[in-house]
Image 1 (cartoon, protein in one colour):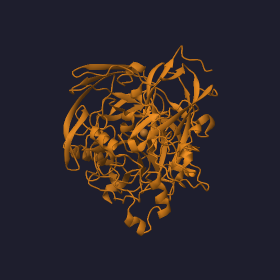
Image 2 (image 1 turned 135 degrees about the horizontal axis):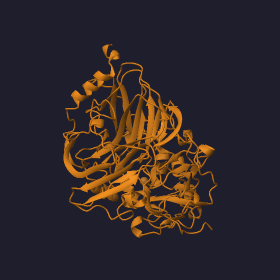
Image 3 (image 1 turned 90 degrees about the horizontal axis):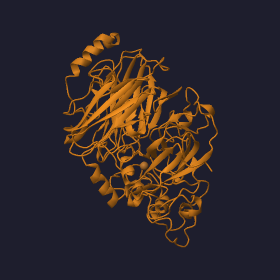
Image 4 (image 1 turned 45 degrees about the vertical axis):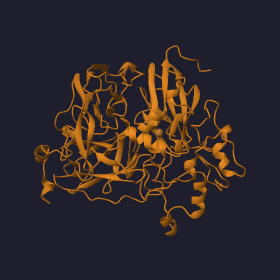
Length: 585
Ligand SMILES: [Cu+2]
C-alpha cells in the first residue's frame, strides 16, 4: 500500500489541507480537527501568559443546533501545553451574561486559584477577567472545565498537557489527545427536572415482555423480585444515548475524527473523559494498549485490551500500529446506549470499521452491596424508593439487609435521601468495572495500576474516615452521608499533613466517579509502596474503595461526584485542610 511509505512531512501537509474544513459548524482547535497530525497541530496555548475568553457559539451536532459555551470560541477548547516547573498566568475573561469559572482539573495549585465558586473564590462576573497565577508542580495529562452552573455540560472544557522537566518515562514518536464528551440538545437543567419527575426518564433499554418471552435478560422470578424493590437492573446511567451524542474530540461517529500516524511509530493517546454524565468503555479492537499514566501520574506500563474511564479520569496509553490500516477507537457508553467511533489512520479519508454496540449489561446482586452466596434478596415486598427508615413490611426478610441501619456509622444521616444501604460492601478495586465483567479479553482494573515511583509519604494512616455515597435514586436525591451540600453540612476537616485512610462506601447501584480537588490520593489496591496516585476514583455499585491521603494542601477544597447532575443534586462536600485543624483523636 502506498500509504505505508508515507513520511511524516506528507502527513503534516495532508493534515493542514484538511484542517481548513469544519465539521460541526463551529471551528475546531488544531489538536481536535479531523485529520490532525497530533497534539501539536495548529495553535496551542503555552508560555507564561495565557488568555482564555469564555463565550458561546451556535453549533450543530447530529443535525440539531444549539449554543455551546466555549473557551476561545471552540468546543472542545484549545489545548494548553505547559512545562513542569514553569510559572503561568491564565487570564480568564467572562464574555457570558452569567458568572463563570475555570477549574484546572488535577493541577496542584494554591486553593484561591482552584476555580470553584463559593469555595475557592467568588467566581468570575460577566465582563470580568480573573488571573490565575501559579507554578506548575507536575507533569502529565489533565483538563480544565467550568465549575459554574451547567456550563461543563454545554461544552466548556479542554485538555492540558504538561511536559516533564526531566526525561519522559514513556517516550513516544507522536501523540494525540482523545477527549471524550457527551452532548445533548436537551439543556442540562431540563434533564435534571425530568429525572426528578421520573428517575428512569432517559432509560430506553428497560427489560420488555418480548424479551422475557424470548428468554432474554432476567427470568420471571428475578424480574418480579427486582420489580418488588422498585429497582431496575438496566438502570446504569441516568442520562443515556436516547438524548446524548457521544463525541471524540467534538466529533460524532459520522464526523469521524481522524488522527494520523506513520506505521511503526509509538503513538501516545491521551484519553480524557470530559463528559458530564457518561462513563465510557474504551477499546481499539485491532490493537492492544499499554497504559502508562492514570490521572496524569506515571504508572508501570501495563498492557490491556479495554479500560473503563470514569468521568473526569484520564488515561495515557501507547500503541504501536505496524500496518498502514485504519484503526478504530471505540468509546462506548457503559450502559451500551450508544458509542462513538473515531479513526487513527496513515492518511486522510480512511474510515475505521464500525462495531456494533454490545448487548447492554444488567446489574447483579453484587451491585446492591449484597453477598451473592445463596441470598434470597427479595423474599418480601419492599419499596426501595422509600427511605431506609420507613417502617418495614412483614416478611421482607432478605431485602431487609438493604435497610439495616445498624450497618452505617452515626455520621450518616438517615432520611428521605437514603433509600438503600449496602449490606456487605466489598472492596471492588480489583473487580472489572460495570458491564465488563465477562467480556472475553483483558480489561483494566484499578488493582492493575502501580505507581512508577513510590510515593514519598510512607507513613501508616493516623486515622480512618468512612464516607458513604448515598441516594434515593427514584427521587433523584444524591448526597454524601445522607446530607446534600445545600443543607450546609460541616466540612470534612483534616489537619495539615495529616495522613488519613478514607473509605468510600457506595450505598447506591450506580458507579460514582469521586473527585478530590487540590490533592492526589493513593488507591489502597494492594500495590504496597506503589499505590497509584489519582485525583478521581470510580467507586463501583454496592462496593467500596479506600485511598490514603496526605492532606498537604492548606485551604478549602471541593470533594464531589463528577457526574454533573449528581454534583448539582448535592453529592458534594467541602474538604478543609487547616494548619491548626482538629487533632487526630
Ligand atoms: Cu454520582
